[in-house]
Image 1 (cartoon, rainbow, N blue to C red):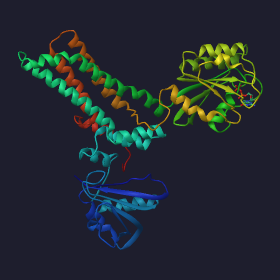
Image 2: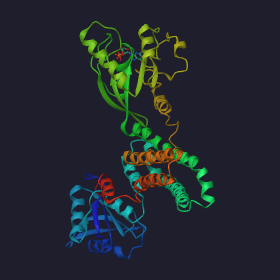
Image 3: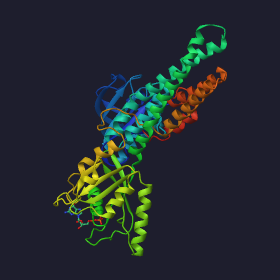
Image 4: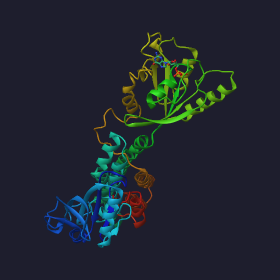
Length: 449
Ligand code: GDP
């Protein structure tokens, strides 16, 4: 395979830039361009050296060069990494020099693809690498690391192996229907298949949670006028976005913004207060608010704890019942007048939108509401869309196999469905993935990764 090279750090001015080279010519090329105490080809793996990158007798930069020897490198091949000063022109010149010396520019994801092709990573582990790079919060990172370490591949593999066992027994049964043992085995077939279904369903369930983390939660802030919705939104956003006034009903449009609350991104809409109104412009705002409420995945219902509960408040409580919601009793800095007996066994948070106090508990409450657990230490793996689609395909086939078995159809049909399910899982881990699937996946990586 050719020797590839790329700038692995973002191409901006920065403290450092790293140029990576992988393939059998790496050390020869490094010897040509690097001047230090020892030639890179003489260096031991996992060691680095200070020296100069020299082009036709002229020094381009002083750098640190690190050597990784096959198979103990990311790609599994001989690899050299050069850390130079973080100049865009400089890093490109060093890359150009490497290419002049015989390397090829690496296409997007080529280093990780080689790691996959040399058996260092499964396809799902490679996806873990992608997830590590794109993780925006602790939960996503913990999941990504677990995927990168192979926990998802291991789970899938364990299910696949049990499926192979089941298929093996079935094959024995259909090949030698007169023997005794296979009969005993098929008595377990129903429970075995149900167990496989449970395990696949469990893996599949994590997709929705991962989606919440990756794509954010459509959130509606609702409450009657003047309870502090705009103030809350501004507090969450950290700057003044909506106009806050003391006159009721001044927020007329639905304003949409995204805000990070702990590990979560809330896609917020500040809305006109929900209330009966004659004002035509406000009417539009109120309609939008109602619609937003229906479309949202999470409702933050705001109440003014310095006032008594009104009929509109009660109506709001009634309307949000069927939605995942958190009740924010706002203005906790003022004397309390709200009778909290209406709020028994709800997700309640006493806050001051003005000062921000109490809002620090919001992430934990959201985590509980979406069953993401209290802490992010436990490594739940959030599968991605490709993985979801493969697990779901496998699940459909195993369910079909179970129905066929229960309806007393020949076991041959069950075997055929089990094979299809197995194919879906092996495509997921990459053991039976087509070239198109593999290429498609690595195209999503950046150059230099
Ligand atoms: P909205 O109509 O629900 O968007 O309410 P606003 O955010 O416009 O707030 C209405 C009034 O309540 C403004 O005068 C805010 O300054 C005030 N307000 C909002 N939150 C708090 C709070 O936590 N404490 C106090 N003391 N006043 C608040």
